[in-house]
Image (tube, rainbow, N blue to C red; front, side, top):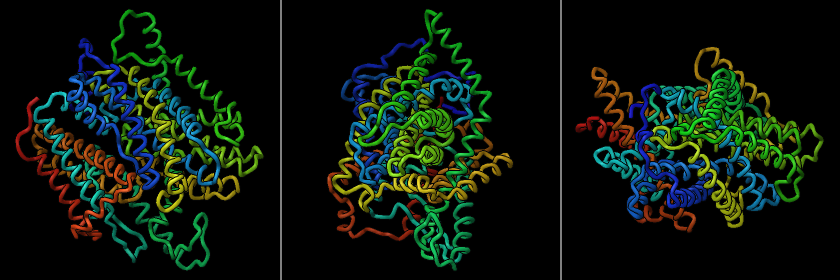
Length: 636
């Protein structure tokens, strides 16, 4: 598939006059099981490392294999439904781990039912608020919004369905991505985070040396990757050296840090100061993005209303235009608002209140649209959910403080409200991503939306159980399960309630966002680079550079260039899926108390040398290039 193809001439993989199964009992149950598994695995990894693993790509492989191998079912629409349903497990895991563990760290009671209810409320509005904009984001912006992980899922599903050289290419990437992850992240034969300290500047540079980021970089290309890296350069070679230089002679900690700047590692300066700046830039980028999209959004609403009326009047509607009715969207939003306002959502905690309930629904709507667009730019794996949640939490906590509530209760109420918003933001991005590959394949949006929500309900309880299991076993906030994002949200909520919040840093970030807009550059990718460690942006840029080299090699033959890039996307889709699959397997071993690095130690091959790890990472990038340019490619 050529993603640059305009929507005018677009034809899905399964034509509208082809009737094949989509919502079979087997597919729904399999999708729900995968959603629960991915939710549990990602909660564990997220609380331990702050990162989550993409679910749609490995679920595409697993779903197709199980449906064809065990059940002798060869419907790509069923496989697509399985992948979409599984993906919601990853989405809610991110929403949960960023916020709700803060309540447990405070020593408050938060049961599985409370976690599940908060998740289901956020998930419902997160799903519903994408519906009115689906036509605009998915169809009207086809060829403009890349949805790189949706394209990867599409390629995997199509090639798994067809077999042939394309599927072999995916499997080759899958095998290499899995092997690379198992040797580095499992056996620990080399570090996944090669880093070099640059003492003269007081900063550091490194790479997240994982196969999945190379794959994502190749899929998104240099346009987005360079903007992300530009933001990272500003943070790590501009702000961090400046803060270190000015702070070296100061003998007292500077808020919000609790230690001297002279004693901080670069990553600590980033964590204490730069992330607030990045959050401010992400927030203003979201507001500007929504304002610029306002005409299109209004048009999208109008078209959605026309579609609703047409659906009532018509005897037959093509499945690609069958969507959740807007009346359901309104009713669902009202229901979430009333429950959030009137029902206490945790034991011993007062009701959220009218003003905060309004803010919850507003931010769920506002950042839901932004989240969906961000996934269109760089995929759900790189969606800055925590940055948007920070912006929401700052406003919500400020309003709660003005109400005069007891600060000890107020900070908990703020986290609950932010938790609903966070889950909704994560869900909106995940739903938009799944609806994109559903559009490419030719599935039914309405069926995907509600099957995803069914998966969300079941996985909400699974995720909540894992959160409490980890707390009982290790203690959330401990070195074993540090829950990094939740710790930041805890600090923010306490800071606002006590009047201690670095608003200056947030405002600086907002000004930077406005500056970027005045330059005519996209804000959100650059803000994302500010907000994330430079190692992530550098790894993505590496993959994008490989694609650029391929483009340059075939610059005089556009047709051949497109075929080679498509082959690379297939290969890198497999890389991302292999990395994710083995990452989950490693998580299972860790959960069972099995330390695979012991095997690496027995082999005597473990290396923590950053240069060695980087050399292996470059070797993987070189392997991608060689695979893409070698041999012949299939003709369409």
